[in-house]
View 1 (cartoon, rainbow, N blue to C red):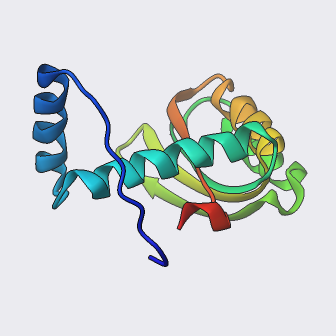
View 2 (cartoon, rainbow, N blue to C red):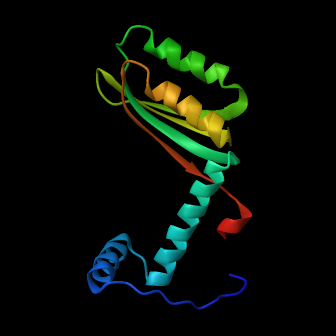
Length: 138
């Protein structure tokens, strides 16, 4: 960290107690580390809202017995151009597969791609997680 600035915040007792319990379970050594991570998360969201370049993962669980679903997933990835950098595929059981897609691109395009995948019949669950390497996140 280049330069630290000390600041203070006012919180209700119960809110601070709950916050301390949560960050303790997560392994934070102090409140400052936890608050810095919360601020970084907010800044990543702001970058995504401005349609900046982000990286992300789309994790999906789907029924691989659903007719044509595998072909639709592959076709969508090919149509995404260079936004899909890599995928990992795992067979969970006889009916279910887990796939993780690693992506990079403008947040609007990444979100639209993810929404298209998540809305396919046979995709049981999924979540898009975005992040950034923006200079403001250090």
